[in-house]
Image (tube, rainbow, N blue to C red; front, side, top):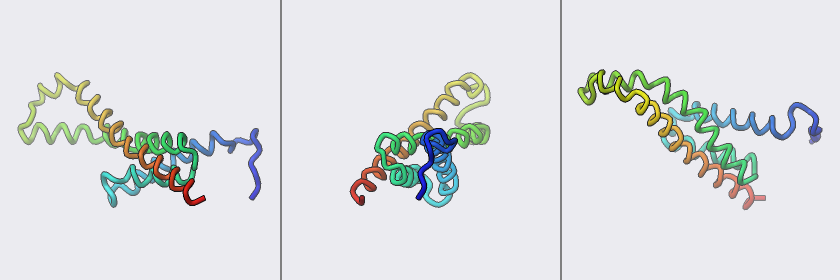
Amino acid sequence: MTQIPQHHPMAKGTKYGLMILATAFLNIGLFPITYILTPLFTGIVCGFLVVSTKRGVLGGYLGAFIAFLPLEILTAPDLMDYLVQSGTLTMAEIQEMILVFYFLLILAAALISILGAIGGLLGSKLKRKLV
């Protein structure tokens, strides 16, 4: 296997960024199959491939966050419609607390990304045990 020179565009940082992007796409692709455990599985894959514990944890977290944040934000109007139609909240109440509503969606994406970080930790530890 040939080594990539440090001055090459595909040096360490670029490859790691592409790994995070691949983890995000893997999160989106596997979500219909594994639902809530998707960030854990993709974090394990990222941590296993990266090997470094810090990079595995960060890669698992960022991959899940990059994947789930747009999904949360894009589905927010549907969630608002559901809350109004079910009688849980009125439209005036939603308009009053719109910033809090979006903050909670961002917080939900951050919390589910913790599973990705745990998966990254498990994946890097697994790779170290096997090698």
